[in-house]
Image 1 (tube, rainbow, N blue to C red):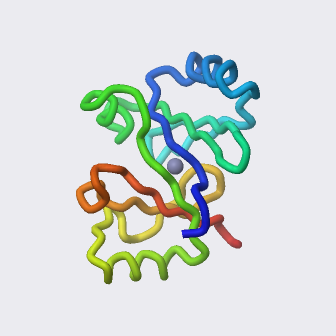
Image 2 (cartoon, rainbow, N blue to C red):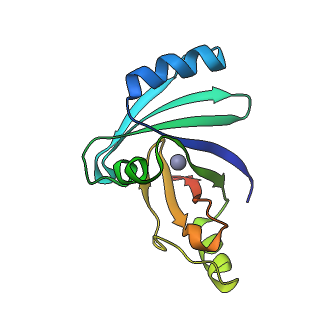
Image 3 (cartoon, rainbow, N blue to C red):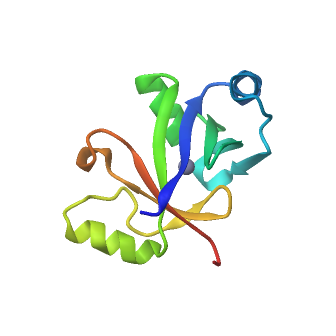
Length: 134
Ligand code: ZN
């Protein structure tokens, strides 16, 4: 792991959450991006070295909608940047960690991403991410 890249927060209403987080963090979100394949609309804030990613479901069966149904709004995942995603995946697999998607997929913010299963990480959903075409 290189650093904590961002913290993902599930919200019901992105427009309202953007206003709230702008007040909280003292700066506006710098982009909004929809990831259609994941059924999610995201907005990004910068605070120091870390980003905050707000996640709103765009359809009722999206993972974010299911998360909010089960657990309510709040912290959804921690995302750590890695230098070589495929290599990190096989290293973590050899240590016994389970993955939700062991094959990287395209996430927001020009990242390749994969998620560790929270069963193997103390209930915390952990995302590994790497800048695409870097
Ligand atoms: Zn994320």
